[in-house]
Structure formats: C-alpha cells, structure tokens
Amino acid sequence: MTVFVADEQSEILVDLPRWSRLACLTMTEERAPVDSELSLTFVDEVTIAGLNERFRGVNGPTDVLAFAMDDDQLSVDPRPELAGRAPPSQTELLDPEPPVVLGDVVICPAIAARQAPEHASTVDDELALLVVHGVLHLLNYDHAKEPEAEIMQQRERELLARFRQLES
Image (cartoon, rainbow, N blue to C red; front, side, top):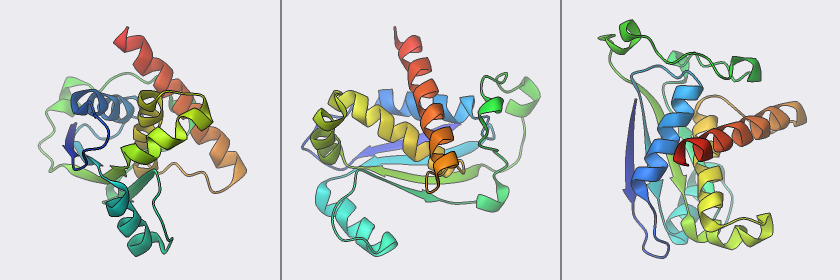
C-alpha cells in the first residue's frame, strides 16, 4: 500500500510520516487491496475553500475532502464485523496487478486547529480523525444517514485507538 503525502500549507506543522502511517494502517485494517494507493494532501483554507466550492458547490472552507477513484475496482465492504481481519498474505503481496488508486484526501490543518477545542482534543487528535475519516470515505464509508454514521464513527474510534496503541 502506498500513500503519497504533501504539505502545501505553512500555518500548522504537519508530521507527514505519521499521517502516512495512519492512512496505511486504515487501509490495512480495512483490507483494502494490497496494491492500493492514495494521496494525502494538507492545504490552506483558500485552497480547500476553492475545492469545496468547485466539487461540492459549498461556499467556504471545510476540514477534509475525499475524492474517490476506481470505485468499480474497490471491493472493500464497510462493515464493522470485518474489523480485525488478518493482514494480507504473501500471495496477495506479490500480485502483479496494477495499483488500485483509491483517490485523494485533502485536509486543512488550520480548520483542524480551530475545531480541536470544540471537540475537546488537540490539533494532532483532530488531524488523526480527519485522516481516518477521509480514508474511510475512499473505502466506501458514508455518514449521510444515521445507521451509516454510527458505523463510520465507531470504526473511526477503533482505528484511532489501534493507532495510539501502535504508537505507544
């Protein structure tokens, strides 16, 4: 699994290797194809506001946007009962198929910093949530309706707890 990371803003210090590890953990735990790729880009408010307007028709900045690609190739089923599955086998790792491009996650650290106190968290905690949230969107999770929102939020909590456990 590959995560391409970029920091295109200068307001908030962003630990790119850490967020890349979290995105990879999320893909692995969700059993995304082993040859999956995604990009994770941190941008300023002006950039994310422009993307939000262009692609969602919503005026103003937001915290995270996810742009899915290769939807027809993705076979990840966002169900909580699939959590904790075994890691990919050696056979899966050696598969010669071209990569599956999951898509792009774009995060605005300045918005995350503003939201952190509202969520009783740190900027890093908020960024971690946004990384997981964005990647889960690429893996077909949604929160438009209540049952899906509960499933997505529960999975976010589980993945963040797993990441904290691995970091300690």
